Image 1 (cartoon, rainbow, N blue to C red):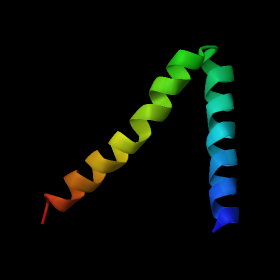
Image 2 (image 1 turned 30 degrees about the vertical axis):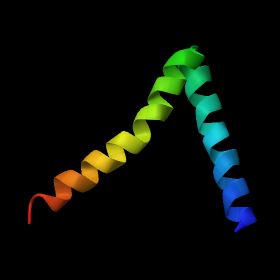
Image 3 (image 1 turned 120 degrees about the vertical axis):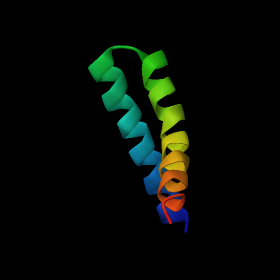
Length: 51
């Protein structure tokens, strides 16, 4: 379990670094990272309402 948590944190940090290097803004990268869980919730809600 500790391995999965550690690898997840490392991957999130690497995604943040790529986003901040691409956009040259840590604030924008933070906004994008904060919206990822909201997008997952919205996509799950949208798929569930089609039934």
